[in-house]
Length: 234
Length: 374
Image 1 (spheres, rainbow over the protein chains, first blue to last red):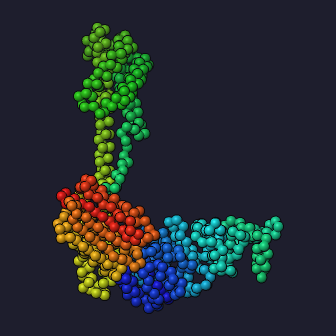
Image 2: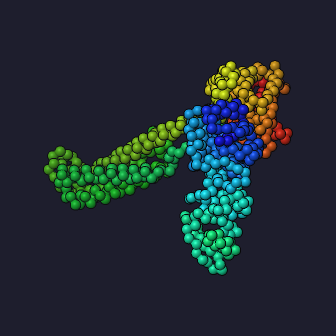
Image 3: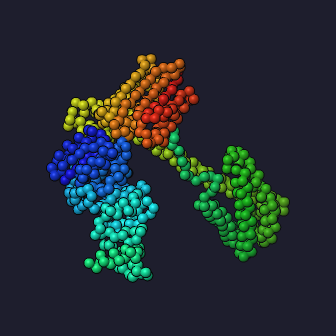
């Protein structure tokens, strides 16, 4: 598994590298000291795991995740910002405190190994998971769990379980990276996850109304309705 | 951050009586007057064999009037803040007020009093023959005295309860004050310990143990010195610049192990400045700030400069660091600087100053001016 160490303090990076020697299945493809460089290297080297320090020059670890299209698995590392990391406990892989306790690192690495989504991230591949920061809260959102993406100006509102976080991207830009077998453009403002469609009803003027599980009813425009029917009947 | 910490109180204010104390007041009023009426009624019926219905009505009426007047007196005493008076002044007012209400009450009850018209019965005649044959003026005087005494007792009870309450709330306020003070001290200590630095330093030491054990030993010693100095330091203590710089140098050594080539330092201290007395931890705080908001925020780090020299009757000390352009350092360093300024104000009045100079685009310079004679 390809891993990348991102920490601005050289001794901390070396220490982590030494600690990771215990896990021969992990290959450290790069060590980086700032997020500018990290953003570039994540794109070119496509690591599957980031060991990411939070406090860094030129932007925090969260800022880095914000800039990535597709986020690999992440283990946060921090000296003293537990409160910042706790926001992630919902579905982040793990977080470690400095100085790193080897036993805790072993636990975290076991979690990495077990994590279901441990697939290599290839550039240009469809998005599996996105990082969303809305206000003071952050999530790693698996896209297959998102039932609806609605455009709100330059933002996208995700309907994800009981939550509706706002993503700072345009819907058009994201659309190209979505899995076409799962996501369907219903109208100018909305993209639906077809896995969540419960029923479809005919509407006026050739439009369709799709009811989503746990979600609202979405109108499929006339033009898209034709496409929808041809796709669904196949 | 002690000086900037607000000490907030949450205890009950004295001027506005909480609901609970109103309730207690009425319970005591009704209970007290009720008990007083009941004992008089029982004594009248059992001992003097007075007719119970008319006695009951008479006592009820006089007790209601008595209670109403006592409430009026209490309102008057509250409005005129009797509870703040000295014991002597309070006693004089209490006795006077008791007689003022005692006189009309005494006269009134003299004529409604059944004992005056009723056959006193054998018991009373036997034990208090004087009472039944008393002349009217003497009887009125006795009645007035009775009422006045009753009100003196009422006031005594009222002010005793108030006193106990006031003392309890004062104790509560004091303990809350002490708690707020302790919290402020704890907060200050935590910020001085600089946990972010501490844990990162420990992480560096862990790394050095594998790479360079003798350097790790040096790091541990320096870390211990820094911690000891921080723990023993006090807000109002002065130390010589030389003493403070020993600690600063140790601290910078640890930080340069952390940041390696990202941190370069230059320290120029004029010999004449070394003996000047400065507030403990002040230069240390400025240097910590320079690292936290300058070096640590820059991917390539930079040069940290400390300069000190004498000018006229002042010591000038400057801590200069490169700063990231995107951020506004004034906002982030504000808290640490304002605490340092508060300390300077306390120790030197207006004669010392601390400024953050941001006039150069990529540099931040903290400039400290301290009078040579404290």
